[in-house]
Amino acid sequence: MTKFIFITGGVVSSLGKGIIGASLGKLLRSKGFTVAIQKFDPYINVDPGTMSPFQHGEVFVTDDGAETDLDLGHYERFIDANFSQLSNVTSGSVYQTVIAKERRGDYLGATVQTIPHITNEIKSRIIKAQKHFDTDFHIIEIGGTIGDIEGLPFIEAIRQFKTEVGFGNAINIHCTLLPYLPTSGELKTKPSQHSVNVLRSYGLQPEILVCRTSKPIPKTEKEKLALFCSVSKDAVIECRDMKSIYEVPLALDEQNFAEVVLHRLQTQDKKSNLKSWEQLVDKIRNPKHIIKIGIAGKYTKLSDAYISVVESLKHAGFKDESKIDIKWINSEECTDYDKCKELMKDLHGLVVPGGFGVRGIEGKLNAIRYARENNLPFLGICLGMQCAVIEYARNVVGLKDANSKEFDEGATYPVIDLMTEQKSVKGYGGTMRLGAYDCIIKKGTVANKAYGETKISERHRHRYEVNNEYLEKIQDKGLVFSGMSPDGMLAEMVELPENDWFVAAQFHPEFKSRPERPHPLFQGLIDAALNKVKQESKTGK
Ligand code: GLN
Figure (cartoon, rainbow, N blue to C red):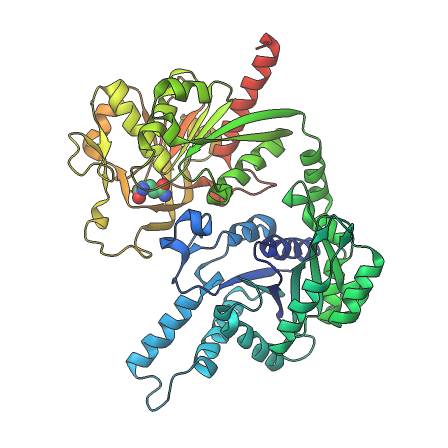
């Protein structure tokens, strides 16, 4: 029988509930239990696909093409599982379903209300996902902070659900912050007490508290929290700031976090095996090399906008016992080629990630040109591949002013064009080419060597694509189209064999990298970048 774990947050937002939930998932998996997750987001957007990365960070994409909250990425990476459309629930999608039912006449005669119609729909989403995943544990993280008006229907649904499944089958973990006051040298528990009071006023008593803190929590303060929040002392868990998020599961394990959860859920404990994770953390803590990787994009002020890319780079770094030092390059600052060269001269590798819109494009093209001409290891992702093709078309093939129709509708050489099936698409929500599609890799290519396979499946999120009318012309001048869709109609990967590592993909490899299983394309980039580091230290550069 599946047991349910609800995770709420109090005091402030951005507490890292996702990392805490993912860490719990990791600990339960390490004991041999199966774990699924759902993220409930109280905003009205049906999914985050139409939100600016500045607002919401990265949009994570699942195999089945859901555009989801970035926390789902943490869950997939920590738990090493693939989740789905069912894992992402927003107020918008819940209301959309209820309103569609109302229009269809499903509730004929009734006044459609938050309770019971919206709350019933929320509960049915839990049941549906539970039936689909059918795991030992089902973790549900509720976005936002307790007390938010828009989160109330979710909190009420949890209250009902907990009562319905009965004691010992569902628990609530409440995550809070203990602020540190330097003047008095104290960690303060009052905001946590208040947030538990708010939770209680909605009829929810947390079974476990996880407290984010910058300092160790003294025993006296833990006791105070236990007393005022009505949780037992062993259920006040400290979650201190860590250098790496991958250390969090181990820090929580030291306090028997999973055992406390299992006890509350009346589940027999099992022996855990965290050996390989401990080895991973050991590598993270003791890197032998530092590799400087530039990420050239337009959302560089908010690193969350590229979180899966950053994590994927780190994963490949772990394998090479290297720390990845990221240099954020605002592509708009690269519009001037001399400035671009200056910004890039200390790099060991470059990533041009996905993106939308014309802003910063000329700078990205300059950055790619620099990488190509200077044999700087390069990985282009989605828009990054489209830019690599444009750059090559302009500067090598000689198609002056080659461009994507996304940036110039009337381009003389539209080497990137809207995909045929996109031409009739109206509206922006969930209408891109989304999710996993197969790609056939040409034998003997760099991509083939990296994957060790000729048929792969990767996740997509795009509208534009290489224009096949130009494919031959570009290929003739040396850019290899190393991956194509199975019908041969869509270019999925390009590479330049003469460079140490110059590979770009129309898909998003960053969604499938795992800390203990780095993605081959990121590994290829980091291996090549590490070679550069080693050469530099030999030549004393
Ligand atoms: N804007 C480009 C497209 O729609 C690239 C999208 C992306 O990088 N995710 O095809």
